[in-house]
Amino acid sequence: MTTHSFRVAQSALAETEGRLSELARPFLDFLPVSGVSISTFGPLLGVETISATDARAGRIDELQFDLGEGPCWDALSTRHPVIEPDLAATDSWPVFAEAVRREDVAAIFAFPLVFGPLEIGAVDLHSTSPAQLTVRQQRQTLALSAIVSRILLRHAVNTGARSTPSTYSRRLVHQATGMVLAQLETTPDDAYLIIQARAYAEDRSMREVAEDVIARRIRFSVLPEHRTQSDEGAP
Amino acid sequence: MNETTRIERLLEAFATLADTLVAGYDVLDLLQSLVEYCHDLLDIDSAGILLANADGELEVVASTSEASTLVEIMQLDADAGPCLDCFTTRAVVSVPDIDVDSEKWPDFRAIARAQGIHSVYAIPLRLRETIIGTLNLMRNERGELNPYDVRAARALADVATIGILQERSIRDAAAIRVQLQHALSSRIIIEQAKGVVSETSKLSMDAAFGQIRDHARSRQLPLSVVARQLVAGELRL
Image (cartoon, rainbow over all chains, first blue to last red):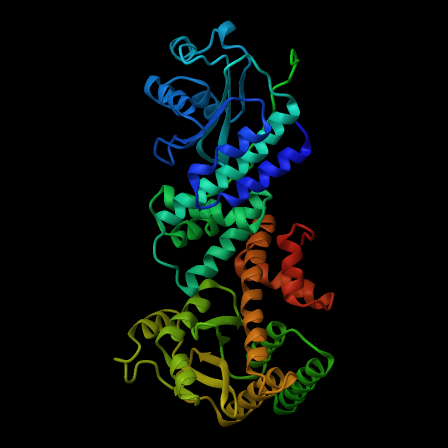
């Protein structure tokens, strides 16, 4: 796939903000896969399939949630992509692999949805014939996944938003934002979102979390960069 | 400080304010200098300036200490306190003893008293019909501010206000609002920069601000420019 189709997918994703059910489609446009689904699970957000390009993609998600095993669980717990180019040959997830083969799925890939220290969910991609993703495609998928993570997180915290903080509280939040951006070497926007998500996860106000950051009771640490699986054996 | 030194320092403050106005300046830096002159020259313990934002709420834009207690006191003062009264009546409000007439502004009085503040003097930053904010002087002692300090404080406040309002024509209200709003939004990035320095140098927010201000002054850069560099990771103090 060319850089161009990746860019097109990237801007398509940016334009879906607000319409979460559209989030999966851009992946289909630049990757050699048959279907894509995006779901949230883990400690922060509830278990939910947010977007699926077709019914089969939705069922693959449901199977994993019902069985409690599968590539999406592994992707999120290891924070790394799970690449399974040939399901017929795998020893992983015996129950899920058996069930999903009945769906005519031959290859499956799962990418974690994380934001800083926060676990959000996963992107599941499948192909009805054996398939492989190149390292470049894996990197591009990770880049799109990072955008999806922000969109989902922003949506969750805005939906559950508390009242607007007072002027003085905002000042504390800005100070804490500075501390977090220095801790994680990130941008002010992302640092602000981290604080907002933490407040959301703990059902506290942003001011309370900001005060903990300023008093150095909370510290965010840098996580290792994502690694892509080697594409040895790729066609 | 003896009388001659005081007068010399006061003249120096006016001269510096005037120079800043002639040379072109950043509103936020001008107001920061103003509170620091007040602190150095007047018989007061702390000072702060609040500007009205686009929603008409007063926000702290400069203060003699960035310690959160002082900022919080002034912000409460802006919600219900002498500073808000000063802004709405466009007139000086003097509270010589915070324990007299104490049913007014209970929240503000409680927190101010807890921090040892016993008298407050609020001056409008006003030129004819236009008011942009207030200068608030706080003292640990009870009693009226002495008349010399009152005159000096009002003159300093007037010079700064005239400077801000005259840079553009006073009739150009929209342009003035944009400029004041810019000073308030610079405050966001300065708060973030304080956080960055507090984290990387393990300093209190007040000490972090001191470092940022000293760096800005030594390089003759506006505070907001230095703050932006710190937040973007282009500068480390």
